[in-house]
Image (tube, rainbow, N blue to C red):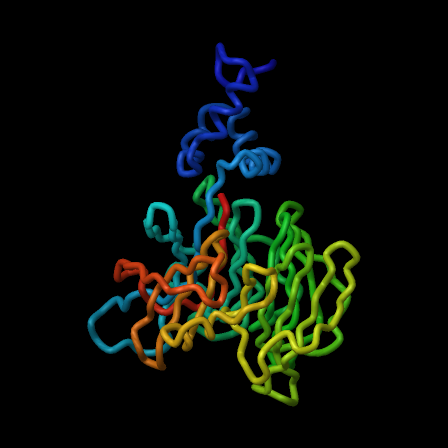
Length: 338
């Protein structure tokens, strides 16, 4: 039996009404009827909202959480996930992953595609053992689901996402051997497929998506730990072939979280933007602006800034005020469009 989207309204008009719902209302709206639920959770509806300009970009950050007590903390800090809306200036915490209620796996990777956030890999926060866990957070339902594990344990790998697929390459295995292998994860089918290997090992590399290419920036081999390469490798997402790009990155410079894409589509290092963010810098591309975090020196307070992307590397840092519970060190981040 056919059910009207909104009784008494033409389908086209009803669709436009639902398109204008803010994503925070989806969880309640999904309970109205099965047709609303199927529509609101569909990939086609997401891309319809994106085409018509009703999605919004926000920064999703993995950051250290405030200590639970005033006594000096023992061991590494706990990390949580939060979302910053640059339009409203509002910060919101994301509920913890049920398997890790006291903090995310250390050094986990976070990427986003089609309104979902994917958290994968890292170290168990209690045992420090590498994990293969994959979790997906649906902003429309505000729920986590655990997905198929990564094919193998790896840490400090490059990751990037586009069109519902997550690309993973490099890093090191549980024996600290640098890796050249690469895989792709399909969020919709929950399947992993092996990709062609890169031309060389790349540990502590960084993943960046530029147009229709997945870039793996810098890194080092097993026998040259800490000697970061100035090269990168780029995967053509259409052909599945890698190409090596020499001179793409500053020599002996760690790319973790600070490699990004400038206004001209080329690689940039956000740590070089300003002395205020040269230590522990992290950049999240939000379209016309970039959220950049970092410190002036080791141990200095962590600052949060917005930079007009049109000004590129010459852009000025505009400091933003951040509530204390969200102001901890930012390990990594990604843009979520929902």
